[in-house]
Image (cartoon, rainbow, N blue to C red; front, side, top):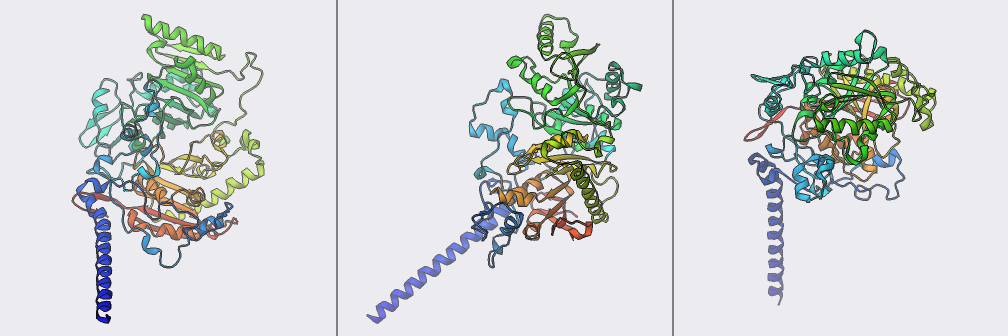
Length: 588
């Protein structure tokens, strides 16, 4: 009996040992298979779903279940308990090469897979449709073969590396319109467009002349600063406006003319993927002095002119809509019909024709919704004074002029400190496309006025919509939910500024790991991220440096910029250049 009992125990121990070894080998197979499988660009290189840290609930990391949203309590969720460090990934798989231009919320393959019933006539298929958490790609987006560090601004306005955006179909399709020309290893942009074959500069001067602006200068002595260009093509119109101190939100969908926005951002021109469809654009009312459409292929008559009403919402009182299209000048029956119906619509909105010449008509929005025009404009100072003047809509948020002035001063000091920390790594033209992921009143972007950069000011949608203040300052931006991917191509920003955005994500019960992967997606190789957050958050980010192929550049506490607001840590990383072939390797 004793021997039998002993044999039974040994058998149980043997079975337990075999099971343990099997589980361990299975773990190794899954773990290393996900890494090395990426080199074959097969199914294992494309992962869906969650990792163990993908959803950071408060109870999982020892946080307070009754979190009331305070910063300190939120950051405590990142304080991993002893023994949990091994769950931090040592590497991420690499997506297949065919996903090198993936835009998760504008992925047509996802739309097909989800079998969404969308109205194509209303452009719903070009609007945002984000994947559910379990269908998100948990892999790093690879650069295309032969990728090079982008050409620097201002040279990049006129040429880019073909390898970075290996798409030449637009050059052939628009060969008679001077959009772009392939020349050896580069793609060159002569500055043409569908309705301005002879160059955007001459076209812009003609618009200024039509409006009787002094010296044919489109900025109208600083009174015209922000422009919305819908159906922008490769954004040459917006690119050539920059020299006049006019900044343009160049907008186009990822449609049959694919990659036009990708070309714009590669050139260093402000641009955003979006469409006038069934949803409002993510910009506040009364944001732009000029809206522009040059053969933008928009059906302005649909749904009783609802898209014109959206433009009316976005235009400031007294703002202009420049429309270059056959309907403005052609004499065939269909164009005349469209012109007649469009004229009737704008008349009901009280718009008037400011000028009509050649291929272009310019309408002007009234100063008030009534015909008497007694109310003057929106009270903005001319540029550049409006950048530091208290915005007229400041009171909408309960902010005082003194609060605004202090915010401007604080961020001026912080940005100066950032540049000091970055100075060993950057020169005057190292960075061009910048994003402030939590822009508040836009003071980060305002502090960069003397740098040759532009800033996409992003206001998180779960906070106060201060974006109207940003536009009142003469800057541009968008509202966004950082629990989802941003509407831009991979590798389109040189620098991201992340002020407590990681902490905010955790408070919303979203995945900070997803956010880091998304930041890597939109960051150019050799680009930088400035994190400003609490120490536990910075420690958490540091655990991911190797997996994301990032390297630390600098660390400083808030005392370095004389900050009185607490114990924030400034942590700056740089994204390495890495390539895929038979293996993943660093290319220093």
